[in-house]
Length: 418
Ligand code: NAD
Image (tube, rainbow, N blue to C red; front, side):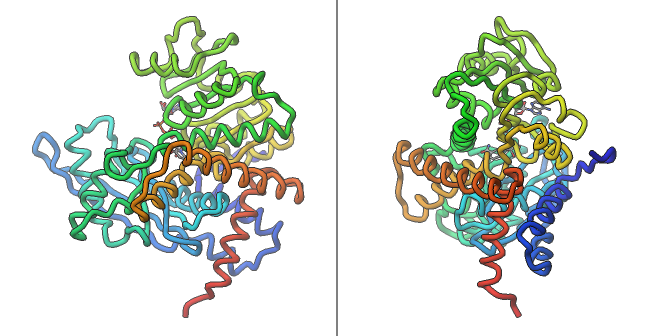
């Protein structure tokens, strides 16, 4: 463990890439191409605020790689959005779409802003201006954005509308994660949490853990964490701890995920849930349980706290919650870590299903959607697991090896222009 651990998420990506290139004995020229984004767009978006003053927000769209299909990735609104973070998220999307084996590349976008301190009108004007400024660089066959932290179907609807007005006809397939009324898909909202739950259940089978007797803890009780918890609980697993940005709760007798959601909707936090003890986020991460689901932000499990993690399986619902130093410690401690590029790929898989329906002007039932999701997730999990067993590496390296092989094979077949 190094004492000066890098917290730059793009460094984590490059480190994982190099590790996997070494194992696969890849051509250094091809690996070099995977260290750079194809295109970075930085825009300044002037917005008239409610008080009449003009504010200028910086927006990004990083298109990382499109060897396997159109760029694909979410748009994040957060005060910490910066180029390194967006680059890392775009690179992870490239790996993720290849791990789950759908015909997309990887991209990500974001605006540095604090949407919690902005009115809906201000957010709409900022979103539409950003959409207009990137409109020539996105499109159903070019780059298809989706929601991420602090963006949702509402923002996707504004982007779709702005884009459609610019091109002169409705283009629902330009974004995914839309509301149902304008081309969204049944099943999409729960797809990330469902994919996470499916991967976790498959991992339990490998470790001979009966899901019905398994206990789990969720860091980040938001979209991914809530759906993951509800689906695992529907299979009999018991949630014993959960947290959000304001702190956590613990009850060894079990916490009902639906009732905790009702409590959070009423009080805006998980703490104060009847009968449960208040704990800190640090305590949540080190809770003794079978399954730990980090579903909040990056860099939560680090070289400093990894040795104190006390579970058998970690399912990364969030992107980048574990640093490379922590990965090494967890692997040595025999903790099976399901990496983000596999464990939360149900989200982009769900987006792909929505895009397919839009392109064909078709609608699937939720049952159909969930069945297709299950099949693809199980196949991806087993592919990654087998690769990690074959090369005696952790699942993250196994996932990267599968993805990088698919991307480099496509890159080689396409050739290099000119
Ligand atoms: P969200 O905003 O719905 O939920 C995030 C939750 O984390 C909130 O409850 C928030 O209070 C909590 N949180 C924030 N900081 C925290 C902290 N320090 N400790 C504990 N909890 C904290 O966001 P989401 O859509 O669920 O996304 C969560 C993560 O999952 C992100 O990393 C995102 O990139 C990733 N992800 C989301 C999707 C998706 O479809 N929503 C898909 C793939 C990956």
